[in-house]
Amino acid sequence: KEKKNSTTKSGARTADAAMRQSKARQNVAWVSTTDTQPRTLKQVAEDERNNDKNETASSRRIALTNEEGKELARVLGGGVVPGSLTLVGGEPGVGKSTLLLQLAAMIANGAAATNTPKNVLYVSGEESEEQVFHRATRLPVLDGAHESLLVHATTSVDDVLQLAVSLQPAAIVVDSIQTVYLDGVTGAAGSVTQVRECAAALLRVAKGQRIPILLVGHVTKAGEIAGPRVLEHVVDAVLYLENDVAGGPGRIL
Image (cartoon, rainbow, N blue to C red; front, side, top):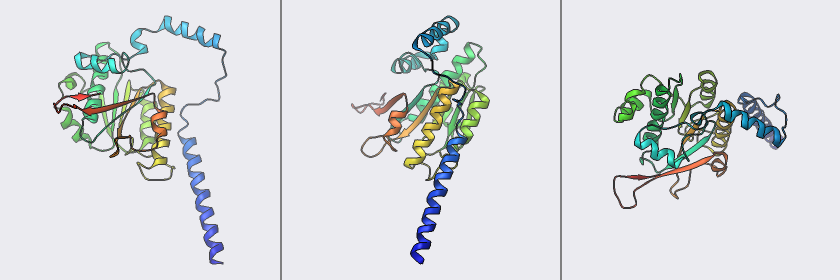
């Protein structure tokens, strides 16, 4: 009888977990696919030609300001692509957060220079807003981005998704993917399931809203991105920030 009760409870927990995951997927289905229909390659080509006529080069890639921005843009293939999902990994303390804070400021400054009313959202799951501010004071590039760079300290991906849809920012930085969680998904933040589902949810909103999202990713002792291997396949690009092999003060991206 005890064995039967234990089996029943285990089955109930499994069903409950499956229901929560199903509900979570419904909650994060920000990109509706019910109204879309398959298109022929000829139709796709025609739409691309029409988009090329209406779009400028800056709307296809977000340019980055100053000399540091040019180097970063070169690594990214010419700039930040709208709707892209990029993962930046590296050892603790190598400067991932500082680099992406600089990148966020560059995008914000570029939007201000072109009179584009766009903010950049920096989501911090590891530091408070005050800590991010004090780190930002060491970066000259932030001088012109104080009014357009939004800082939000949260570990809830649901909050990030809602802000992405409502604010329509020029870009979003999530620091880091191992510290955020999705409601209704089993496991603690940083677990295999949470990292996979959080990345998938952010991917959907990035593609659907054409908002570039950049993720900070921690690395293991073996030098690999922490979390499931599928994370590196979900994103569009994986960048590694490393210390100078010669022992100098520089960094290699």
